[in-house]
Structure formats: C-alpha cells, structure tokens
Length: 413
Image (cartoon, rainbow, N blue to C red):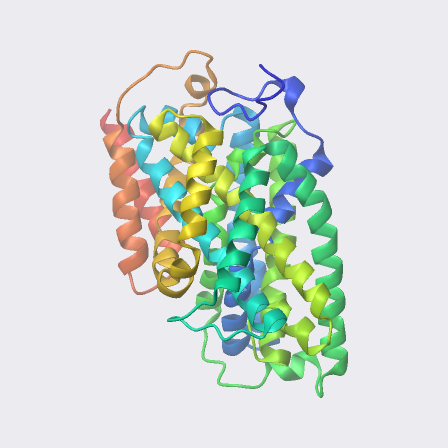
C-alpha cells in the first residue's frame, strides 16, 4: 500500500496501520462536536426541567452508545469501512443504497455547517445583514474559504483528520466549558432555576428521541473511523465514551445558550460575554471537526457507487456542498432531519448482518452477490416507519422495522 494512500477505501485496514487509542478518541470526540446538536439542546431546555434534561441525556446517550458502540466494534474487528461492510451485507449493488443515503445526508450537513459558520460571522464581524433572500458577497467568500479548508482536510485523509481533531477538541471543550460557566455565574438565577422556567411540555421519551436523533445520522458512519482502531473492544469503549461526552457537551452548550443568551449556539453565549474572537475560533473548529468527517464519509460512499477514488469524490462532494451551502441552510435543514431517520435502519442491518455472518464477512474472499432484497426492503420500510409513525422514538421504530424484515429474510433463505 502506497504511503500516499492510507485510507484503504477498497480494502480492510491492516494491523500495522491501526492508530493509537488517544488518536481515535480525539477523532471520535471531534466528530460529535456538531453545531446542529445544539439546536436539539435548545429544544430540550425549552421543554424539560433540569432533572428531565439529565434523564434525556442519560437514556438517549445509552441508546446512541449501544448503536454506535456496536458499529464501532464492527469497524475495528473487520477493518472495513461502512461501504465495504455494506457490500458484504447488502450485496455489490445493494450497497449503493446505504452508500447513497449516507453520502447525500453527510454532504447536506457539510453544506449546512459551512453556512452555520459563515452567516453568524458575517453578521457579527462585518456587520452585514443576512436574510433567506439576501447574502452579501463577503458571506459567500467566507463559505468558500471554509469549504476549501474543510474539504482539504478530508482530501488528505485520516492523517489530516487526526491533526484537526488534536487541535480542535481541547480548544472547543475548554473554551466552551469556560464560557458556559461564566454565563451561569453572570446569570440572575442558577441553572436548575432557569431550567424550571417556561412551558416544559416535552416528555422524557420525546427528549430521549431528540438526544438520539441529534447524532444518529453521523453515528452510522462510525465504522469509517473505528476501522483504524487496534481492536473491536477498544473501539467500542472509545466510541461510547467519546460520543456520550461529546454529544452531551454539545446538547448542554445549546441548552445553556438558549437559557442565558436566547440562542442555540455557544457562539452567542461567547458574544454576550464579549469573547468575540474566541467565539469565532470555537465556532469554526467545532464545525470543522464534524464537516471534514462528514465529507470524508461522503467521499467513501460515492467512491463505492462510482468506482472513482475517494479523493476525487471528496473534491466533487466538497464543491457541491460549498456551492449549495447557503441554500441548504435556509431550505433543507428540515429535509435533512427527515433523512436522519433513514440511516438507523442501515446501521442495524449492518450490525445484524455482521454478527449473523461474521465468518463470511471477515473472510479475505467473501462470497459475492448482487443484492440482498430483504436488507434493501428493511432500510426502505424502516425509513418510512421512522418518519411516519407518530409515537415512540423515530430511530428505534425504524431499526425495529428493519430488523424484523431482515431477519425474516434470513429465515426464508
């Protein structure tokens, strides 16, 4: 394997190219530093008291941890990316469905992330007026610069992702936590008292659903990164720990921002504390660590579908995401949230397929087949149920439906 191509998009990651535990932890923590999760934190703060908020974090984190932890184990145990695993569970052409779904979703969030950085910075730094109908050229310039930088880090692969994570994770965690503590200290009531205000009309179940939904989409891509871990057990522990800490921190940042600054992002809290330049750094790095992982995942998925290299697909998807960023931000967030519900069925079928066919999937020469129609049907019907069933937790509903259909197919065969 050429030293210039260490992303192993077409093969399993060999033992000599596995990464250290601290490196994997930093990458996974950075992946969860997702600004859109703060939106969910705002909704939790609006609808739950402090005890309800903590319970939602706990139970939602347990569900998300079980799901991503299993995928993390599988990625490390097999050394395979999500798309290579999908080939062995869904079939050569059947794998195009999960690859397309996760690529489209992650490319969309990449674009939204660019706008989430450019729009508030354009407003605050340059004093520009930005609306859904008008974006000054300076704002587009910021989108372009951020898009080029974030696409470049994904283009250069896992080494570049590692460098960005080592820089961003401690800075975001420390500066964000300090800002939160300062906001609470400067407030006119304690955190518990502030959480008690408002209508509080959200149930714990709904809160758990928000926590799970905040990162279940990105979490489905976990094997793309844990395939570089030294063992399945280590990968599972690191994934659960990093995702629980990172996602909980983002939700808390969003909740405190809503309570003390009337917004949904730590950026607004830091502005209120007159920490503008720190706010820009935290916002930029926070988005960068998720966006480069997202476009890296997109590149792997599109490479599986098209046969072109991961690097070329990263460039194409980065270009599309950058060009469409502002439009995606104002017009497509609701659709992306709907698409989030389509990915848990993919993940649960990969988990079931792996543990029911582990020997075959780990084989260096697995049996090739075109399509597993029960796996495909499970994803399609699971996505429909996740988005249309009005009760319960959407992602769980989708996973249960997909599991039943896939297991029925195993019994019939």
